[in-house]
Amino acid sequence: MARRITSVTTFLPVAYADTVNLVNQNYFSIWQGGSATQINYFHEVSLSGQAVSSSSPTFMILSRDSTIGVTVGSVTTVDAPADPSTAALSAAVLVGNAWTTAPQRAATLHLLNCSLNAFGGVYFWRANKVDEAIRMYGASVNIGEISLSAFTGGTPGLVGGHVIYETM
Amino acid sequence: MIDHRASPGLGAEAKGRVANFIPVGEGDFFEGATQTCSHCTRVVVMEPKRTRERGHCWSCDHYVCDQCAIELKVTGVCNSFDRRIEKEIERSKKAPQLIIP
Image (cartoon, rainbow over all chains, first blue to last red; front, side, top):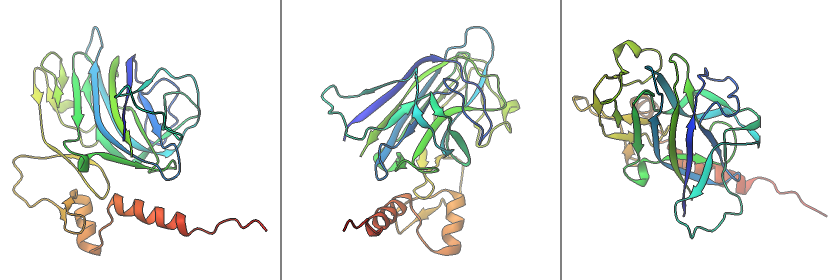
């Protein structure tokens, strides 16, 4: 199927503990399955620090969510197909960083620690084959939604990046 | 890959603030192999100096993390994410349908 790229040009992450509401536009994005039986694979995560003046430890976490977002709002994420001839899906993945009901990161289902110092640091992960891709199934709590947000403990700085995923 | 060659980095002092954190200090560059546990789908950075056997599920024929390897050893049951998806699909197919008279 077709791969899509979610990107955010620049944003300032706000650190949140697990199982706390992620406030609109203070996190990279969440991805929620477009239907109850949809399978999605996550292939790549890339984050580049953009802080301009001081050390900014930024503990970004890709995680499943224990509370899912409801109704996408005004987002600052850009979600585009990797291939220009990609046909639109009838039930596309819901992507964005603004939701009427806020999502919450699960405490026990962290998938990838994307920590970096946003003052000049770069983080990159790519699944080396499809077996290694992170899977998301359906659109319900714990398995049907994945978020990329900052964890507590640092002083987050400006970050930009992209995530590549694929609906199967 | 974590590149802190042009950054103050995240040294050992930041360790402990967040779980599964890899310290990459000022001027350092880290590149490591990762594998995704087929049971919990967590991404695990491989420790190149490790000599202990890594977890492997012969049922789904894939790497499993240490936590899932213990569970696999205790229960002997492959609980891979793909298998759980298959079970869920089967369950949804068998779910009672609304009958309209």
